[in-house]
Length: 175
Ligand SMILES: Cc1cc2nc3c(=O)[nH]c(=O)nc-3n(C[C@H](O)[C@H](O)[C@H](O)COP(=O)(O)O)c2cc1C
Image (cartoon, rainbow, N blue to C red; front, side):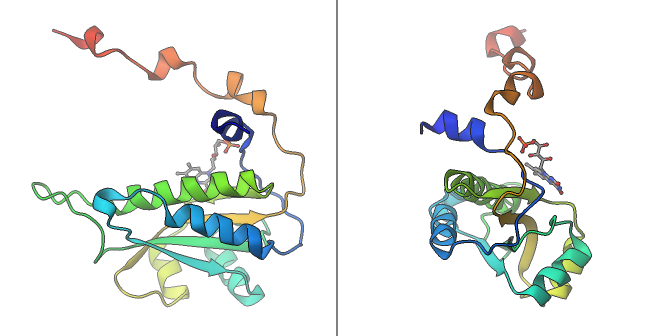
């Protein structure tokens, strides 16, 4: 499968079978996250695997994970993130989003379903899982075997804006 085919095939899945995630597929997903590029190669991502029933229930108190049998909680270690020297801009949320993207595409490549979840209160989640104080939870990736047919790769022709709405040539902004 070419990259563009995989990117078009990937879709958010919000209904999962109860089957556990194949450990071999999980390894590939984690490896995809490990090799993701990060600012100045800071590798500030900290990935927490949530798979035990009690932990999944706990997570469900603060985030909708659609009954997934596994979730990856992606944090940035604020002590390890790259901060831009002249304005202290912190790339933690960007690094973790790149890691998420790698892992989400790896899940799709392995035939798993996944959905990116950011709708949660980070402080609540941090307390619930007793995370180290320098770790900030940015994203949750709920993963499992899809229990619904995958959306069509052709959906992007109508579900995404056409390029002329989001891509511009610099010469058009010249004064
Ligand atoms: C940064 C980000 C945050 C998201 N947060 C949520 C979320 O909290 N809950 C959810 O159900 N989906 C969430 N999504 C999934 C998007 O809604 C979804 O990717 C988008 O509607 C496009 O659909 P598709 O993934 O099927 O192509 C999020 C996606 C991204 C990239």
